[in-house]
Length: 200
Image (cartoon, rainbow, N blue to C red; front, side):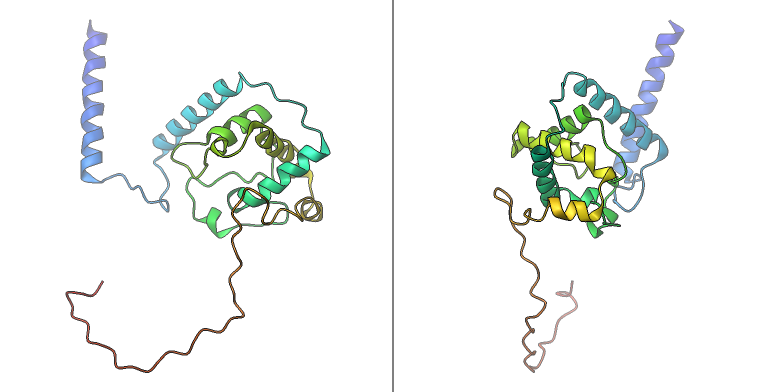
C-alpha cells in the first residue's frame, strides 16, 4: 500500500511540475538552445526503441544493383543533402541551424530496415519528413541502397552518379539566384515620416 501511495504522490508532483514549467515558459523551445539532458535522453530512448521495433518487421530486398544505387543517389541529391550532407560537403547552412542536428550520413551506413522506416515515415519534432507520402517503396529502397555505399564514396564518384539529378522529374527545381542581374538604382524621393507607433 505504501508503494501505491508513493507512486500516486510522485505522479502528482510530476504533473504539477509539468504545468509549472509549461505555463511559466521556463523550458526554452528555441532551436539554438539544446534540450535538457533528461529531455534528450528520454527522446533518444523513445526514438531508438520505437524505430528498432518497427524495423524488425521489415525485410530489406537486395540492395547491390548499380541502377538502384544510382536512382537513390539522384533522389538523395535532390532531397537530402541540405540536412545529411554528401561526399565532398563539409557543412550546409540549413544543417548548421537545425536542432537536433541531422546525422551526417557520409560517415556511416545506417541499418537498411531502420533507414527505410525513417525515410518512409519521418520523425516527429525533427526536420525529417515522411517521404512515403510522395515516394513509393521502390524509390525509398533505392535511397537506402545508396546510403549503404555513400560512406566509401569519393566526391568525384558522387558527382558522376548525380550528374543528371538537377530538375529530376517529380521534384521541384529551385532556380539559382540571378546574381549577374543588376538591381535597379534607387529613386531619390523624400522619405515619409514614420511615427513611433507604426514602427516595427
